[in-house]
Length: 316
Image 1 (cartoon, rainbow, N blue to C red):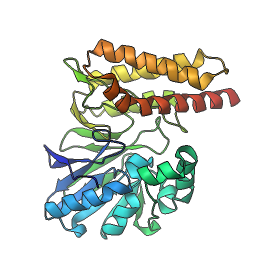
Image 2 (cartoon, one colour):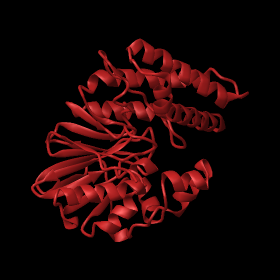
Image 3 (cartoon, one colour):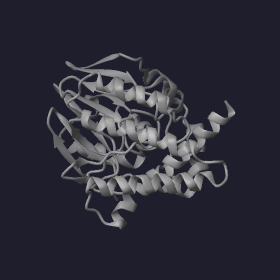
Image 4 (cartoon, rainbow, N blue to C red):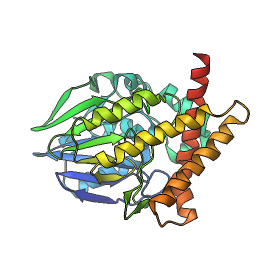
């Protein structure tokens, strides 16, 4: 049984540990405005009891939650959406239009994840995906405004990591809730140089040129902070954006330099070496065991994503 763990941030925002894989890997956010609430990202289905426990601990009724907003439909971000919608009768799900059908009927999404992870691992990490009634689903449009009882949330189409990715701009905090599009930055990967961020290029919709555009689009809002699903609040995001651009370019250069023989294995080796060198240069003081726990799954996703992207480039 996972333990409820959360951190109260400024601006009426609560960061909730979602216990994906282990502590400190993924979180979701509860926003408050004059007695109404929105959840941004949901964690997996196993996160739902923790979110409900948090609401009870804070004497928040189920009817006070107005919106549930997954940044995209990958299961560490949206796997608990169906369970939460079943628990929260007044909530509306706000989702990218390319992801909406997978929330209304998650059977294909679930089957695809089982194909990748295997049924036993799926049951351990994610649990069953529950369908959401179509009439409770709002498909976002780029530039759509949501009124959270006087707090305006601005929705931004931000593909690159996935076609079905959105980002939420919150004027009150001058912050962006970026899902995966602004990289992963685990709190343990820090030094006097700040947090180490890395873009994670998961299959199957990686599009590096479009991802560059999405990062620049987010910077046009002049954010003072970002709220990462992986993980927590990070200030001065402009300083990190240039490194994310460099990382994406490096990924592409590595991928294009390889021939087809043992390509996935070579991608994984070279992307791993790239980040190990940069993490050392960044000055992170972390054990090899903790480093493997934090980034090894991400490195596998990077290699898989680039392999699928290369295959599409070759077909094109």
